[in-house]
Amino acid sequence: MKYKKSQVVMFWFLPLITIGGLFYPLLGYLVVAMMAFFLALSFFRGRYWCWHLCPRGAFLDIALSKVSRNKPAPAFFARQWFRWSIFALFIGFLIYRIIGTGGSLIAIASVFVVMCILTTIISIILGIPMRHRSWCVICPMGTLQDKINRLSKKG
Ligand code: SF4
Image (cartoon, rainbow, N blue to C red; front, side, top):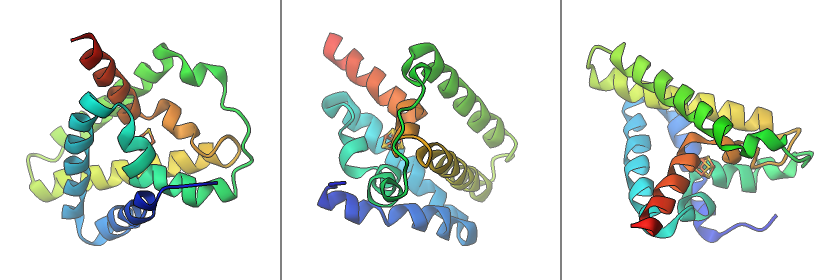
C-alpha cells in the first residue's frame, strides 16, 4: 500500500490523541482544531484532508492495510441515507456528551478524546474483515466534507 510522506507525519497524531489524551485530556482540543481546519479546507479541496493529512486515515493506510482482509464493504455503506444516519447519530451523541460536561473545559476536551478512541476502534473493527478504509465510507467527517465541497461548487 502506497502512502504519502505527509501521512507518515500525521500518523503520530492518532496515538498522541487517543493514548496521550487519556493522561492529558486537553489534547482533545487538537481534534477540534483539526475539524475546523479540514472543514475550511474541504470548501476548496474536497477530501484532500482524508487522503493526505487525516491521522486516522494515515493509520488505516499505513498500519491497518497490512492486516486487512480487504473485502468490499456492504453496498449500503455508501448510500446517502446510511451515511447521514451515522452522521446524525455521531453528532447527536457528541452534543449529548458535551451538554453532560456542565461546561468544564477539561471534560469537553475528554469528550473529543473519547470520540476519537471510539471511532478508531470502530474503524479497526470494520477495516480488518473489510477494506482497510471502510470506516471512511461512513465517517461523519468525511460525509460533511463531501457535502461542503458539493455546496461550494454550486455557489
Ligand atoms: S473519512 Fe474520516 S477517518 Fe477517514 S480520512 Fe476522512 S476524516 Fe479521516
